[in-house]
Each structure stands twice: as C-alpha cells, then as structure tokens.
Length: 110
Image (tube, rainbow, N blue to C red):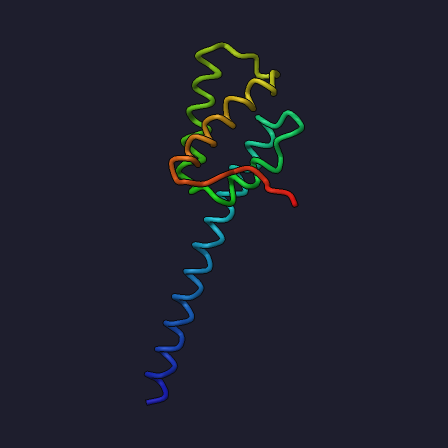
C-alpha cells in the first residue's frame, strides 16, 4: 500500500517538475525575444513598449513581427544602424498584431 502511494506521489512530483520546466522554457523564450528587440530595434525610447508587447502577445506573434520586420528592412535596404526606422517598422507590426487581438500596447500613466 505504501509503495503504491509513494510511486503515485513521485509520479505527481515528476509531472509538476515537467510543468515547471515547460514554463521556464516559455519564459526564457520570451526573454530571448525581448533581448533581441532591445538589442536590434531599440532607438532609446522603446524599452517599455517592447516589454509590454512581450508580456501581452503570444510568442508566435512576436516571432512573426520580428521576421516580417527583418524581411522588410532587408527588402527596403535599410541600414542596420538606423535604429529609429527599424524601431518604427517593428512597432507597426507589433501594434497591428495586438490590435487584431484587441490589445493596446501603450503604457497608461496616471
């Protein structure tokens, strides 16, 4: 009786550990995406916007916005050092994806 109970509890703990590991993986992916946006698209005034977008949007949407932005930057031959233009492009993509989900990415201050 005790062995069966212990095996059940061990199994439950292993399941819980797997759930936690999945959540860590999910959050680490969001951190990577945020770091990428801050490193490659932050002109000095977009940190809050990118943090809000990362918190509210699904990972797939953020990845899609980044891919589309990079493609547009390459297609339009925008200089890699032109952070202002790159930031505008990415913000447009993220804002559009957020609006499709009825989200507002603007920080509301009181």
